Length: 255
Image (cartoon, rainbow, N blue to C red; front, side, top):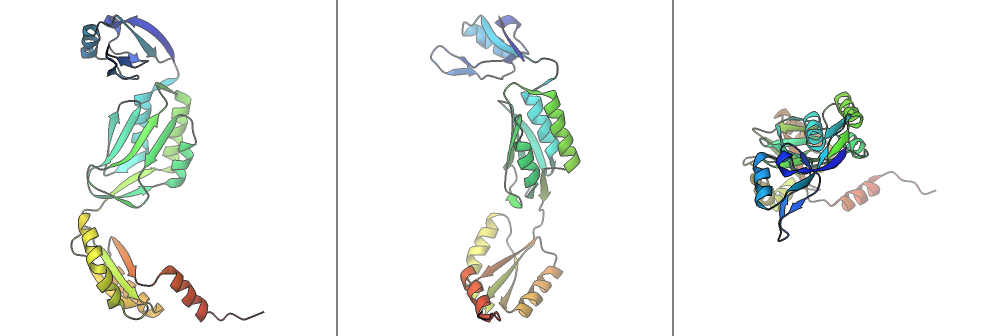
């Protein structure tokens, strides 16, 4: 990439190399901005005669194209891409979805020096119009060879980010207790229904069970027959208590 100072009148379509400020210190145009005709008029109104611009050289990809290009390659499903200033591309959910993220591929891409990606958590719930990822490119330009290498990795490994729509979510809840699952239901049902309602689930299917292996297996089997979107298990038994119970019932022998 090379830089040069040119006449404002000739700057339409050029990439601004440094931020332009008004006389009072307020930002007028940010660096990396592609200068438009209305920007030229605004710059002239502010009394600027020249601006410093950047020009791509052969073998380089502009920051906006790099960010948008990678965003297009990594995502699929109920997602849309919106370009943003500063070599960024944001990805938003177009409808309620389960977000699937290939964490290993994400780490691999973020080890490069040209593109950085931030996403929501794997298996997290995304509301309509919620931003689920941001892709940021190096300022101004990325080497074309690096860009093509990243695209090749993504195409070989498959999508990094998927938005799987949840149009009619069916949530099943299994309330469990060491003796009577009804106890867990009394404790947790109101809270769980409120939280599920906040993400658009109003009528979950629910069963209760003691924490006996056979009873748990039967209850889970009954819920799986309904093919729910997910199963939540609400238990009154703390993880520490389960560990102690398992230890007491284990046929350990002193040595």
